[in-house]
Length: 111
Image (cartoon, rainbow, N blue to C red; front, side, top):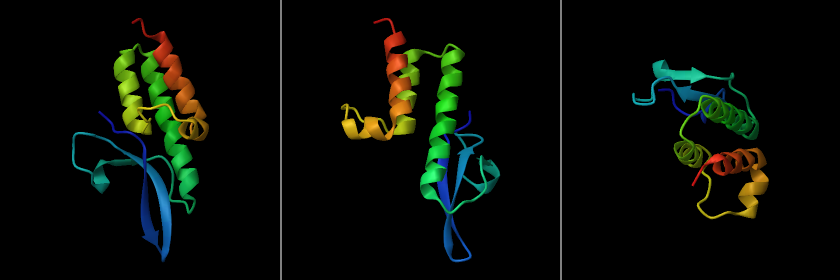
């Protein structure tokens, strides 16, 4: 199974650059042959983080459409997006789409 999208950094010509990657095999060791890159290196860390978040949201939406277990999907979102266990306004404002999808999945559950 592939891993979540993350941001990595590397110093290139004296400047810190950022790229978005995931592990091809999440159970294997992280090394260059086990990485899949979504973008080339860029100098904007925030932009790279936005790209990683969007790709992870696309992954969650695909799993939802495929009928994944909703509670498991919520747990996976909590791990990928570092969703706090206590609802916080600051997190909600910083990640509105993540929270919207998380709540949508929660409301779909039959408890």
